[in-house]
Length: 549
Image 1: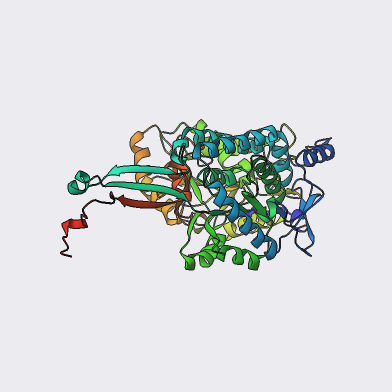
Image 2: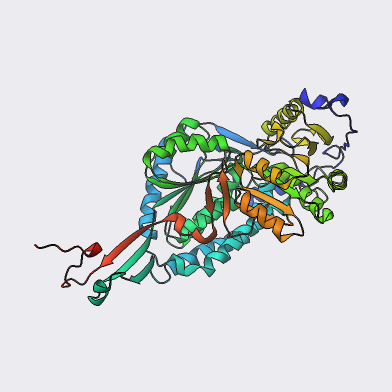
C-alpha cells in the first residue's frame, strides 16, 4: 500500500481527456486540534475501556484470545481494543437470550413499546458521544453519524404509531374473524389468528451503518417480543459495543436483563457454527453478496427464516427533460457521500446524450469542490475509506476498469493513508465495467439515447437495491418503476438513502427481502391460525364433507 501511495494510479495515456484532479487531503486540512481529548472523553462517556471483553453483557468464561486493536481510519492510530469471543461464551449468550425472550414475550405489547421508547431516550441522551465514536471508528463525517442515530429515533416513532400491531394490551396481536362457512357461523364457530414471537433473532451488520441497520431490525423484533443477538462487523466492534451497553443496561433497569447481546466474532469457523445453531430462530443479515452466499449455505439446511440485505450496484438515470442542476447535486452526494461506502451509493449514472456534456462537466466541477480530510473538521465532507483493504479495492477496481475500457474523467489518485480521491469514469453503455459492485467512491457516467436499453442494462447487473430517475415526465418515471427490478426507485432524487420506517431492501443479488415497511412486525413473528368451535357444537367438516360415525 505504501508503494501504491507513491504513484498516480493512471498514466496520462489512460485517457485522451484531461484528468481533473485535486489534492485536498490531510496534508492540506489539519487534524482537529483536540482530537485525543475528544476520543478520551467519548470513550469515558460510553464506558468503553482501552481493552474490552468480547461480549456484552459480559460472559465470565475463560478466553485466551488476544485483544484486537480497532484503528482510526483517519489517523491509522489505535482507538481501543476488543477481544474476540469463544464458542463457549457465544453459546452461553444464546442460552441467556432464550431465557430472557421467554419472559419478555409475556409482557403486553404496549409495555414493550414504552420500554423500547425509553431505550431510544437513553440513546438520544448519549447521541453526541455515539456519533463521535462512529466518526472515530468508521470515518464518517459527524453529520452522517448523527443522522444515523436520527434514523433510529424516527423508526421508534413509527413503532409507537403502530403499537397495536405489537399486541396493544395483550402480549401478542390477535385477529378474530368470522368463519367462511355459514353453518359454522350459525353454531358460533370463529376463526382466530395470533402473531407470536420467534424467540432469539440474530443480527449481522456491515461496518458502514453499525447503528441504524441494527436498530431497523432489532427494535421491531424486540417490540414483537423477541430477544436479539448481534454479530457486528469486526471493523465496527467499538460502536456496536457502545450501543449494546446502552440498550442492554436500560432494559436491565426495567427488569429485563440479557434481552440483547453482542459478541465480537471474526473467525469464520465460529461464525458458521453460530449460523448453524438452531437456537437462533431467525437471522437478519447485511453485508456483501459473497458473505450472503456463505451465510445461506449454513442456514438453508435447517429451513429457518432469514432476511438478506446485500449488495447494490445502484444506477441513476438523468433523462433528457431532467433539471440537470438537481441531478448533479444529488449525484455528488449519492456517489461520494460516506466515501462511496453506502449500500445505496450511486455507482452508475446514465445521462441522456442531449444533456450528457452539461451534466458531466457539472459533476466534475462539483467533485472539484469536495473537501477531503479529517471528518471532524467542519469544512470536510468526505472522510477516509474505512480500512487499508478499501484502499486496495479502490486501486484494484480502477485498474480493472481501465482494462475493461473505462476512461478516467476526474479524481483517481491516492492522497494519504486511507484517503482517496472520489473518481469519475465513463464507459460505453453495455460495458462489463458496469456489471459489479465496487464498494469504494468510484462512479461511471454513461451516455445513452434509448431508455429501454438503460432499463435492460440496469437489470442485467442482477442487483436490485436502489435507483433514481430525474425527469419531469410521470410517464417516464412509471415506465422505470414498472420495469427496473429494484426495491427503491426515486423520482428526481438519487439512489442514496431511504425513508425511515418504510420498506428497505431489494431484488436479485441484493437479497430479495425487505426490512421495515408493512411487514415490520410480521418479519419477526410466526402466525398461528385457529378454528374455534364451542365445546358442545355439532362438528361441521371442511368442504361440506359428512362422516357417518
